[in-house]
Length: 213
Image (cartoon, rainbow, N blue to C red; front, side):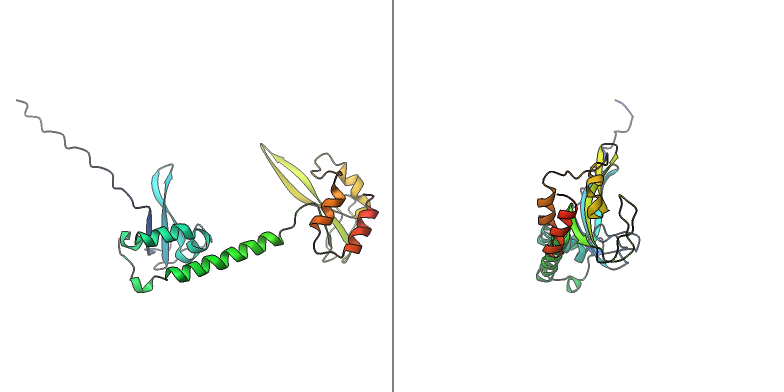
């Protein structure tokens, strides 16, 4: 009979819960939504993720989490994720789901407003100051003048980015011949009419005519 001690079975790794709601234990973590520091004692939600070095939590201010990922916040509340904290927060300090849903709805409205406000290249606009220059000719673009924004492509490895390329209407034809120009002449007049929301239609038509479209 061997006198060698029996090997102890390895302990199973602790299974981490999918969510944790807690008061931040320090001020070192950064909110993955707003990118600001999460102050010590501030309410935060951790979402379990699998990283290169194993599992860990991505932290968000609880209110920020509601604005970005309300479905997950709802799941965390359903699971009473505050009970997973090393020191569970006082339930009185937790915002109600109704309050968090209101934050989520307001955030969605703001996102929709920003999306609608985005301008789609190509478009025409009124120059708001005297500071810009025509990218094609180098001439100053006077405040109140119509400028046309085209898309100039820049290539980075497998990626292509499109940057705004502002030109005076009379230089549009030359600009369209640039090697990395991402805007095509075909259908350009129709695209300008569709995308140029903040300009008087009459001024727009004058610019389109001056550009020779």
